[in-house]
Image (cartoon, rainbow, N blue to C red):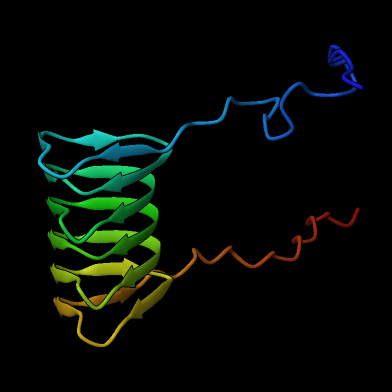
Length: 144
């Protein structure tokens, strides 16, 4: 009825989501009432319900309704439900109806719900242009 668990073989990973090149990074939570004075940096995801007085550089950032950042934010993706005072630079940015952002936003995708407060500039990030391939120039061979 109950069988013993077998050990994982070399062909079967012990954890299906575990990447061979890098261990997974757990999401972090900064709870309401927590105040960070300084920079916050991680390659993982962060859910922020507290306050950060400094720059934030993360993989994905969710700022809850009670959360706030006073500084620059660099992320792959960001969702703002709380307050941001400072520049935001992210590939994907979503401002929910409860968001209050004072600062410029550099982005490739921007979504703003009705009711959100945004005072600043929206700057579209353009992927860098690769130089056109030039035709090889012929060698100058002197006629003998």
